[in-house]
Length: 236
Image 1 (spheres, rainbow, N blue to C red):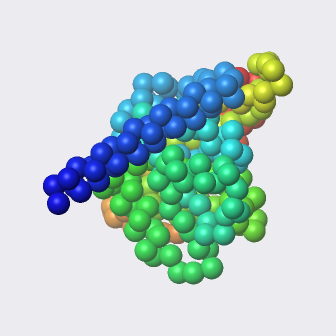
Image 2: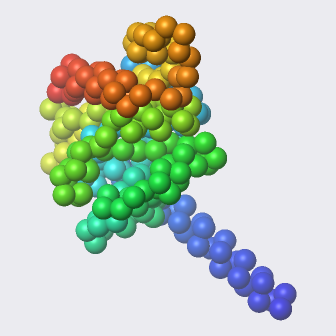
């Protein structure tokens, strides 16, 4: 019995070591596709607290680059249950935690899983509207729902913009330039949202904002991301 346990432990250790070697190789591979990287606040990015990352992640190289950029963080990618059986999808599932989403069903348990990932497991959750449009029959991400989750979990929203590099092309490898925006705190302390949180005199139930207010916060965040794309997306 003891010998059997020893073999089992050695097998698990061997698999763990091989997985780390494979992951290190994949992250080194990702570096080949990385162009210029700029931060609105690198100190803000390096904070260990989890966040909801909104990124225009779409292809395998984008996924690898994002995994490399956040290699010191625990990532959780939101996917659909109907992803194609492609190599990069399997690699995404192997390298990071993945939460499958069935948009045709009631997903209260899915939302609870997101909250647990953020609060209990200290994972940053990655959401891509571009990937949703491509792999989930053209659905759009509901930013008001993202705002609600951010408020419930007390985590910020961090925008990351990726764009095909115009300056750093080598060996016919398509590189990506990255701009990492400052984390956006969805709270009454955030100056850009104070008018929303304090517009009702005497009302202080900040965690229960009506849907239209959360939608307005989502629109402002989307507008900021759009400005990031215009200002930094093609000229990092």
